[in-house]
Length: 576
Image 1: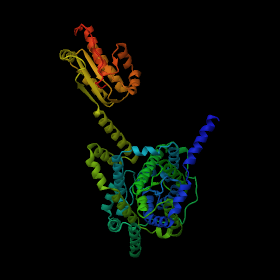
Image 2: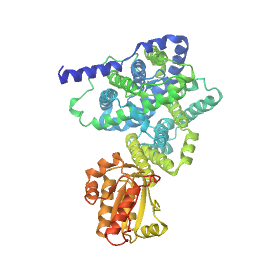
Image 3: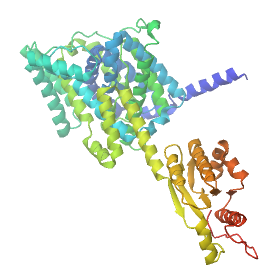
Image 4: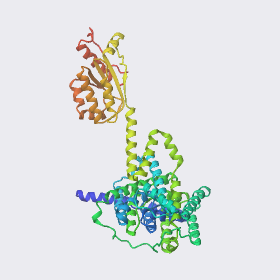
């Protein structure tokens, strides 16, 4: 078999492993009635969210519905979670707004298609497992920042003013407030506040009741009955999904859209895997496959733009509703998509009358409910580092964008973690082991020999501290470095150690080592540190051997007298 054929075979085998299995069908048959009811409930909750996020993205309510139907169905079939419900989300909307402003609707569709291909590639590369390395403060700060951005994005519609130009949410909000002061629209404000209040209060009193759809229906009826012109409706919706098309794809702009596509793919992966993990935690016996989840989200994002939909992810809010209402298999998410499709075909004229202010109220309530005060308080109280990471990530999300926010959070978290690990390393002076020496001999040895034990990691983050401490060694003749407790060492640590040996040598102080582990030996050898020690015969397996070598050196240099009968048996009781 040729290498090419072998590579193609492995790729096909990997793709086959990402496809649905017989076990998925078995799960669907377990309790279809419960899954159908859960899917109906999720669809009722998802309808105003899909409309609202479609409007917020800049592509319109129809794009949000198309995404919920197409992406929701494909992710349910091919995803890695039995409980995940996918569709347009607030986090993705935050990313899409600047893309719409710069490249227009066709740019968003192209970005979605490219991001879908990237997600499939990540699934084939088995990248799903790396989600576990995202620190909890980054996730909490990310979620808090998203909630703030989603809430601020709704200000223009909630105030009933035209959406100002721009993609910076703080600037847009400021301009919307200025416009409202000049031309107040209290009708829109009343509808938005009423819908948000009904959702928030109702969720506390009756968590299982879909107050979002009830509030939207009531607001629509009131606006239509009272003839409130100030309550601007969504507008006309097509009665059905458009035919699939690649007309939006412009090969000439693919290069310029690569960076936004990477951002969308990264966010889709992060939010989807996070949502699937949350769903697992809400149940017993359910565990998602992260690579299959990426694969399903990839196919969903490839298909959704063909029907005019925006990029999609797993939706934490809708997934949580699915779990709480008894959903246990992919049938619930499929039912949710099918019901939304029926609404698109049968009730488009009714849906088009929903006031934008009512949808703004839905999203304002959603943003408020995204903020888990208990989790934020716990992170803030844990350590100063956790609190700093959370705040930085949230502020970066609000001021920059989501991808930069996550990168900043990860970089700061990594730097603080390295600092904490580096601080665990210690250079400690230890007394010489007495061995078989008399009191007089031991006192004489201690006068000319100092022993240091290095504990913990010796790597780039803290290695130079050792050099400074070793350089301040008092006027002795021999320094013994006990290295058996070094947990890890990198090239920087080895170079610093070599530099310390050379500096002490220039001062006439002999350096000997004991207990070098095999794992560190290769690193020390690669930078020439072992050559320096071997050339002088200063590397020893155990500390007692190093002490005997130091005594021999002192005797040869005339610092210590040579005993008449020299006998120094090895001491077995001394640790390396």
